[in-house]
Image (cartoon, rainbow, N blue to C red; front, side, top):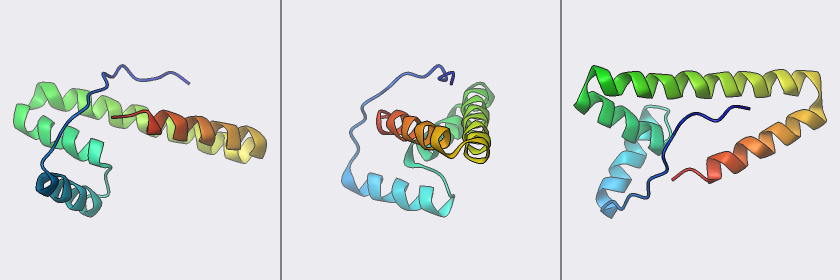
Length: 92
């Protein structure tokens, strides 16, 4: 699987802001990372939005690939899911 071009960033947030982002992300059915990206894109406009949209398209492509593997070969699917989870745990 091709990994999208991203930069890891460690971000310190006040606890209250983190709670607000968590609740908002849950309401919007997004991860906290996606919620932060969406907020930044809204603030910075069209140029930033294209990067967020690219990430969304790439995430969808990866999930479709995993689903195809689940249908085709359960063992290969388990390995793909494990790889996906490992990559997600490495995100900031």
